[in-house]
View 1 (cartoon, rainbow, N blue to C red):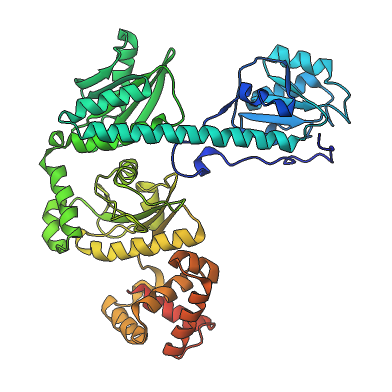
View 2: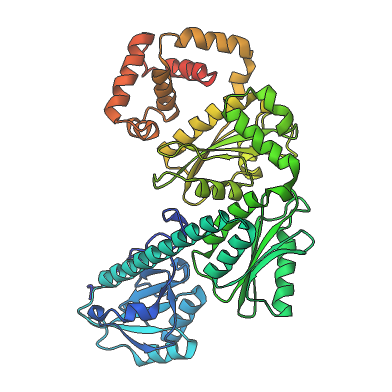
Length: 513
């Protein structure tokens, strides 16, 4: 076992929580029984219940580690400052700790009897850690089990995704998708109208009470009124309930009931939501179909003025560019799921490879004209787990081409700064005092010597305060390439790019493009 050292609140290492994990279902908790089955660790449960779920491992020798616990930990301690076992265990239980691992020797020759009694009395699993087992070995074992569990869950979600996609290709796609979803989740899947009327259903029937609870939950997300959530969950006895609003304007809801809730179930349900939103398009009316057609026409080269009547005038609109955080290309299903999370069906998944997913997000009810950056983010756009997002400021439908460029710039900045979301704010402050025509003419004259790639590199480099590494990340090139391009910019512009006045003027000019 590790030699105890001076007390420290963060003496151990804790793996990151699920939202920071790579894209996909969150990491499932690890049953305590799986850890105890690792014979090489020699762990032995000597008190408390046998069932517990571990989310992470933490080591602390504080007399009261309560302020530093998040819940779900296997807390490891050698009892350096243990004086009042009953109070100590009570604080661990109050903090939501999953279990306590107590290392014997050199501080205590055996696990104190008072600690065993306190854990039995307060229902906290207590593990005896033998002297030859380092705490770090236990942490590695938990993380290994978590990785294996996550891999199993990813495979399950992948199989479910393939099964749902196959069902969507059947002649009767909506009932087929619901049947496959009910099978994958081991419960009941129902498609309901906003009034709670059953359109299609699959899976085992529910008793009257949980069926009624599921219908009531579905009404919570039915988009009949502003501010309705996109999804909601509840429990009725041992039955887990969930409801998801489908895209479109008719308030269709996917309602699910199952006897268990696995970590990947939400991901599987989100895939089904995207498929059902597309498959139920006839229920959505011509307005939603028209907006989808408008996006297709725009992407195929139509002018904004041509598609404006189809998109409507309830904007403004914002353009979002997105890439998977782990660098894997997005397919149509994952891109559609992102669109569903952000509240739009106007999604362009691109042609794969390194292309960004593009989304067109309407902002109904927003005032005409640009909104402050903070208001944009607070209004509709929130970071999405597993994605890096760049968003334009709200813009009229006739200026979506410029907003598309702003969103691309914001995404590059977000990737370079490792931020989950960056919003490209509209020109404001002193820059807004210059007439746009004069500012554009000045920018064209000043930047005329630069090619488009050089101008893009200079813009990115200035936005990142001259940081070579972050600029290289944002542009997807080597840092030496960035240095060469910036050096070339200085030569062509005959300017000292280390001069703040020069940088400020160039930044102003680049912001006009």
